Image 1 (spheres, one colour):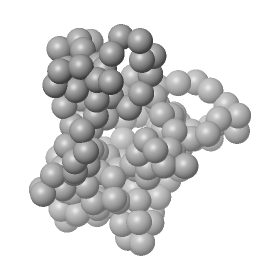
Image 2 (spheres, helix red, strand yellow):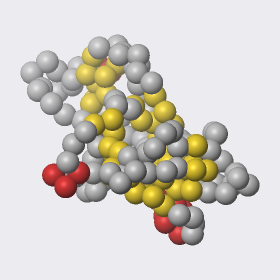
Image 3 (spheres, helix red, strand yellow):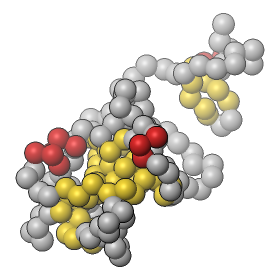
Length: 160
């Protein structure tokens, strides 16, 4: 039985909880996304990480980037991330030559979120090359990218 205000008893080892002020709390039902289409998330960022907004299926979710990895993509399950750029050049190994020219203000786009079969915390970058007149955040989902008609360059850049 849970204690006051949904506190999880100390003898419960794991569960679908929230953490509030260092205490495990039973997860209350509710909306995953608010009316504005933004993830309904509370996170206190104890390690002071950079947090970014990204699009998933037309909704804003939050992500933490932990850095690029040098791994064999054939050996891992990878999710797809789309970065909207004006220009990118990839070398023979699929790595950018110089920094891609990103569209200012455009959020990156994820193909999945935790709980989905195709989700992975490892992201393979795809660069979607748009014209200069493109308006930031017009593309908001993997489907938008794939159906846009814009060139997509699959890289070998993998981030966690």
